Image 1 (cartoon, helix red, strand yellow):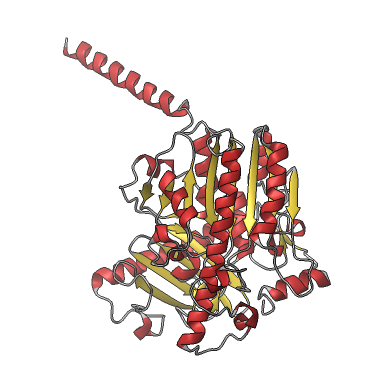
Image 2: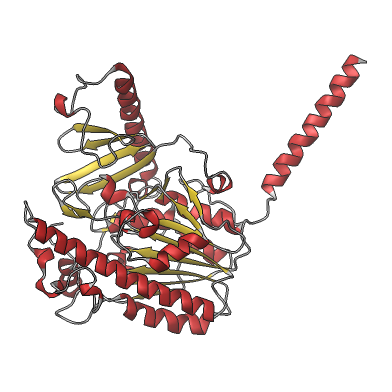
Length: 462
């Protein structure tokens, strides 16, 4: 009799397990959205948005998007400059894994892109791009039915403003509103040069200095006035961008696309204002360069939710795929973060991996909620930070040891340092091993016009 009861209990447990597995395999999409719209912003650090705690009121439309959707409080970029970050977003892989680490690297056919997967899933795929580093010659158009690059043709200007990009996007939306589509829009604001149009050039100063090209000076020890002017103009760029995003959102509502689209807003990297004695981006992996906004809104999704656990670029499209009920691709390294949406208050203990490789400034980093380690690949030195006590990374815990030893660490901190050190190099090795399977090549040749644009955006030194 006891054996019979045990067998019956086992069968019941087995049935429940099968039902759970069946439920998750056949789980309906979290959103009924028909379309997917991905908005990418260049050089936007999250702490300059009101919804991420900024004191200046400059982003009402982005803030409203956050109120209607899900805000990821600890969203992180894979790198601190455009090309490797964008490659991570559009492939769900680390830059090293696919070989996109330098200026001349190109995505090629054996690397599967998000656009290719969405095209196979029945989406018409289109992109509107304002950054020259995301041009067709870099391979980012792979899988897109339409890939529109809009770069400045004015010899005295270096970038297409958001209103000009919107003009072309709005025409496209009018023609394609009835299709099932994936649309990517890559705005260049607030990337240098900081030259917001009126009245955004005077949002925080009675006199505009946008035309003075202060961003080209790059002093090693800026005055308070100089630094304030830079930040004022940067925030003016964000204010202008937010205004144009508001126009985009109104256009989507007018066409009936606001309620039937899954919309995500993200940035490729942040921007430094001498937080660590530098300016602009690409040169470090400190928080000001890798903390970026991520907001996701769609029909059926929670509103006003804030997710605490860190998420990274390689997880964005796996998450969007999951929300749309699409299968995860075996080519993805990143995993969907939908479980975090189901339980936003739970903090998952995981590490994110970050990298930048440029002459004289090559670093890798691993980050958790509390600890972060950065390794200088050229100097062979480490930095280690307790982000819970030092969120701005001003107190390197191993600086006294010259970056190579840990004499001042207590046993608990030293144990965490050794764990992060081992984990960092393990993550780097894993990314490197995948590289041989999905290899990009270095073959971009820049014409004079491309070089003019890149120089105007501040990339001459690279």
